[in-house]
Length: 164
Image (cartoon, helix red, strand yellow):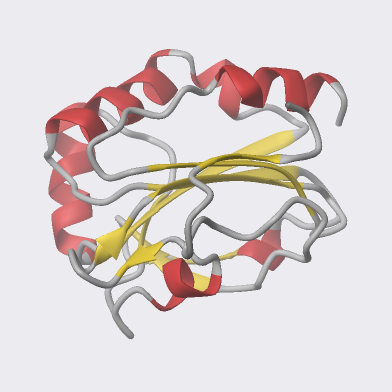
C-alpha cells in the first residue's frame, strides 16, 4: 500500500507517511557518528528499527538485508538499522554475522530516536520493528510497523522504491 502506513494501528504505531522524519545522530557499531542529515538531499534512507541483537527474528531480518544488500544500499538509497542495544553489542553482532551496513545504537538516552519515530515499546524497553522509507527531502514515503514477535515483510519497500 504505497503512500500509507502499514502494520499496527494502535497507539505507538509509528510516524505516518507524509510526516517529516525526525533528525538524529547515533553511533554505529564502529563508534562513528551517523546522522540522518548525512544522506538527505542525496539518497533515500531506509530506517530499520529492531528490538534485540542476537535474537532469532532480528537476525533473520538483518541477514535478509545482508544477503540482498544491493536491494537496500544503492546510489539512490542507504539502509540504517537502529536498536537500543549498546554500540559494543552491535559491534559483536555485526562481526559475528558479517553485517557491513550501519547498525546504530539508540542506547543513550535510551530509545530517544525510537520514541521520536513512535516505535518504542515502553513495557519491553526496546524498539518495535519499525521500518521507514525517508525520501531525499526528509519526508516519510512508506512505513511498516510490526510487533516484537512478528517478522516484518520487506516486500512493500520494493513497491515504494519503484515509485520513489
